[in-house]
Length: 132
Length: 405
Image 1 (cartoon, rainbow over the protein chains, first blue to last red):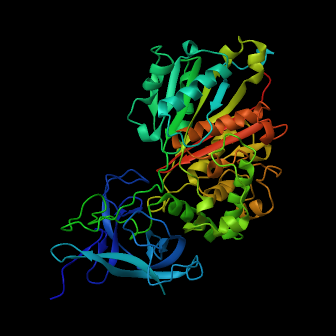
Image 2 (cartoon, chains in turn cyan, purple; image 1 turned 180 degrees about the vertical axis):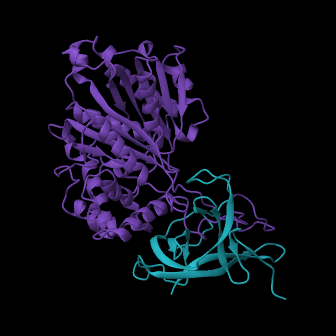
Image 3 (cartoon, rainbow over the protein chains, first blue to last red; image 1 turned 30 degrees about the horizontal axis):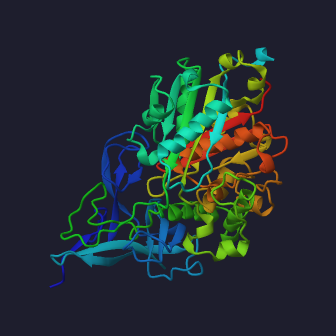
């Protein structure tokens, strides 16, 4: 039996295929990933879930060589704009962490990877973006 | 002469900053006291003349620092506002005093910024808790463990690196070398400033080959942590008009004092937007002061990292839109360039004791307006701008003018 899995954050949905789900303001369409009290753009309070496109462009990045203890370095931190115009912060994965391999504007797509299990054997799954 | 002072204007009467450094044998109140007393003496007033005190010390924001300062320099009973606004804490203290004077509740006020950080190392959220026993979603993102390092970076060199590469994505002529040149300039400038934490010139090669923190920011492209304080005495134009001529002569006009927060932009909740609120603050400040970026003789801006300084050339209108790379390459922000930026050495070399920074930038510009900046004086400077930004985000912009008072 495959180990139980749990997404690292609640806006990552693993089924049927891994994808992100945003809270979309019913009034103005602004998208957010955190639990909301109201919309930061228009102030209205009604939201609907919205599936986020898995493909996008790399809009900004940094290659982190110094981080807090316990965080493996180097890694590529990235800001991605998906093809439906949603902004996402994550890592670039399956890519050399060098300025030569990471280029601004490059096409990427959502990818998931395990980041460790708890004492019950439940595996946490994170998402990143890999070059296409 | 006195008749030329607008009664509802506000002026810097006294200014002081400690050298930024590490002071293991002194505490925060020692540093704040040195600057407060220094600013009072500089303005030829005493603590008894002060109607309001605003005090910012970010890492001791709940520690009644203003009242503890009063207990050392004078418990006169005047109101204290202890303020905290990330790296814009010092600018917020100045704004608070400005508002009290403008509201007519005070004639003379004291703004103090101080911080004692020591060797604090990397600032950021940090700490993926990988050893957690049973995964349970918690917090606003329903996270089962720390996400720093998995879903991007939360360290400051990394966050500001991304702000820089986002600019490079949108504009040509910006890369590792341009960011490094910013640090080269500020280290070079710092050699003329005895108040700077570091006063050492580094070559471009040394900067680019120093340990990589978060590409493209190397160690020498990051500000240090440290200790220090700065203080300003502000006075209403009405009160200044009654002061002796030698005091009026050294007073420097605050032509604009603006504080903004980050307005909504579509990417602002996944990466801090340090641009829009800076542009908004600059626009407001230029309009209020009736000056434009072309009128500025010097600018002290928030170069917490080299990547940050470069994008603020554009945000503050110091270069053509999209032309920040060209601006640094052409020498524009060097002390002999079109608009000298961070002749103090900036945060990168002068240091960044957080609460003190926003006051120290105004101290620096004031000192140039007075023609008292010694070896680093920008000759004939009459208009200058001080900018700070704190993540989350807050931006302070002050424009100062040498004016006949």
